[in-house]
Image 1 (cartoon, one colour):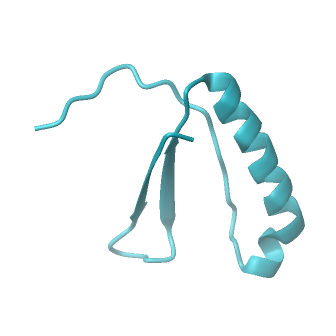
Image 2 (cartoon, rainbow, N blue to C red):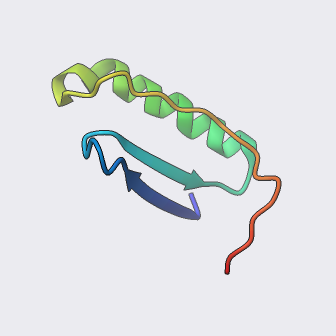
Length: 64
């Protein structure tokens, strides 16, 4: 992982979005697989509700 951002809903602070940046889709996919395994084992114990992960490709970005 080379960068991350964490955000949450102003209406529901328990709804969290974690945006992780990787050097490749393969690295992101491997991390996602490990994350899903952790969620399957520990998610209910940690109180996670419907965690999900997906790999997306950034097609454009710009900062002002």
